[in-house]
Length: 321
Image (cartoon, rainbow, N blue to C red; front, top):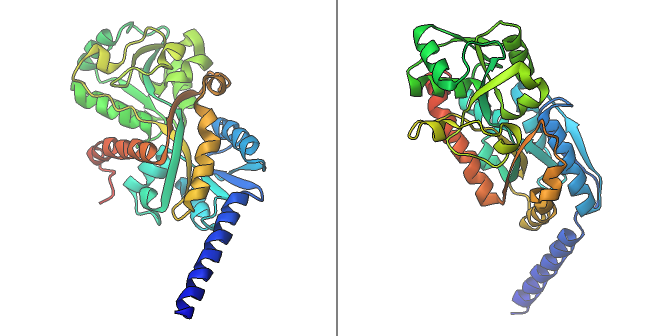
């Protein structure tokens, strides 16, 4: 009986010690890993997020850019660190969907990570150059059925390419796909006449003004920020009820699975302000923002992206089986 009492007392002490440790967390700087290079939309929002987290948690939150290697080195650097909340990850469609769906990876995004929120969004739109003969989406459809148009995208298997694939499938079209490496290079190629049409992010309009013309937003539903970026431009779902549009680009914060719930709760509380109008108003206009908060909600969001991307990648022969 005495042994049982001593054991119970020991467990209680350990519980108090663990609780005290979590109460004191964080006690040192946090590393915020971004699998993209500096200066892009993901990096810009990650740095805004890091500022908020730093202020709320009272320690530096340092963004570390680790581009390259199909996002795998950056992803694995988080999983190789302890599950103590001191290394967090800027998850994105490439790291959590496209790469794991197209090749064997040493990680499973929804088993090895706990996603906390999504902020950055980058829905796609179909663009033509200002001197294009297509002034409406309906005119574009007629032209695309009469002629095999060249479609500019950044990379095969990337979100803009998948949006174009679904658009072609829904409307019975066939394009000559031209991969131009990046979205800016794709839209520059459109302006320069290298391609007839192009898919780029909704917010891209801010960088090119009247040099490019949006014909339609590749989405089923209407999101509030569309009225900021492309006011008055219809979505596929609005213009053609029943047609599907392959738009899904989000990104946010995740921690390694096994991170104590107390730490996850602190990170969730610290990030709540990122969904306020004041914070969103400070996000650059070139970045679209669509807030989702909470582990269950963000997990469901990511799963919806996996569900959307899987058949599209399969249709391209890129799905890893």
